Image (tube, rainbow, N blue to C red; front, side):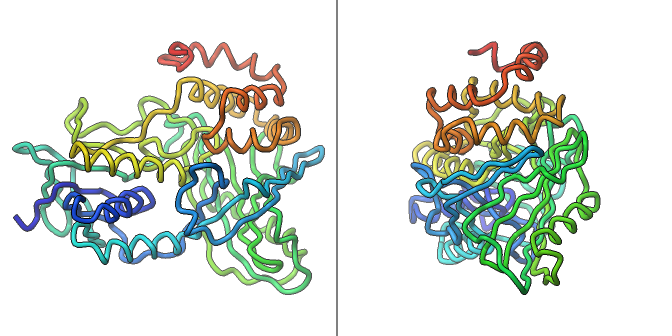
Length: 395
C-alpha cells in the first residue's frame, strides 16, 4: 500500500536525520522509511559542538576548530591547550544540507515536511498507525525522536536554558583561536548564569548566555544577560546580529519525565531517541556525538534484526557521578564557578575532555574526581543514594 512503510521516523531534527543518513548509506538494504517532520524549511537554528576524540563522527561536516579553551570563575580563570583534541563546531545548516541531499538521492528513505502528527500513535493489526495532517501512515516499526512534552520543573534535576546571537562587528578583533567555554565573572548571586563564546573570526562570533536551574528560564529572561555579554565581546561597539538561537536541554532526567511507549509496557518495534530519549549527556547537555553513535547502532539493528534501537543507557557508574555532580550544582549554585575552574585547572586536559565526551577510562574518572573539592560531594552523597532507583545500587 502507498502509505505503508517498514519504518516511520517521527521528527526530522538532529536524531531523525542522523538515522536517515545512516539508512541512506545502506542502499537497497535499508528499510522503506518515512521521516515525518512539522517544519516547512530548515534554517541555521543551532550549533552543535564537541571535542575531536577517538571515534568522533561527522568530522567531514566540521566547519570550525579551536585549539584552546578558557573557563573563567569569580576568582580567576584557566586557559588550556586542547590542540590535540580540538573543540569542533558544526553549524546546523551544514548538517541539514548534507542530510537533506542524502535523503533526496535515496529511493528507500523519504522525508515529508509540513506534517503534524495528530493524536497518539497506536498499534493495530501488528502495525503502528500514525495519523497526521497529511493522512494516515502505517509501519512495522517506529522511531520517535520528538520532545516528550513541554519542559517543566521536576522533569529534570536541572535545566540548561540558553539564548545566543551570532554577530559581526567593526574595530579591534578578538582572539579567534580560543573558545570561552564558561565565563562566570558576571553571574548574579545564587544563579548559574555564564557566557559562552565561539569566535568564528576576529570580528564574528556566536555569543550565548546559559543558565543551569531547577526550572526552565525563558529567552526573555536571558536577554539582558545576552546584551551585556555582546557589549563586552565587542568592546561596546556597534554590531550586527546575523541570527539567533535558543533552546532548553534536560540535565538528569527524572523517572516520571521519560516517554512511554504508546499503550504502555515495552515494544521491540517502537524506540525513542533524541534528547528526550536520552541523547543528551546528563551533566553537560552535549548530544550530537551521542546521537551519531546511536544512529549507527540503530541502523545496524534495523539491517540485521529489522527492529529499531533506543539510546543505550549510560554505565551505572557514569549515571551516579553525573547525578551527584548535578545535585551539588542544584543545591549549591554559588559553587559552580569554583567547581568548573578547579576541574580544568586540577585535572589533565585530556582526562577532562574524555570525561565530558563520554570517552573516559577509569583513570580519567579518578583524575576528574581528585581535581574537585570533596566536601560538597560528600554532603550531597546521602540524598543521591536515598533516591528511588538510584544508580549506586547497581554498582
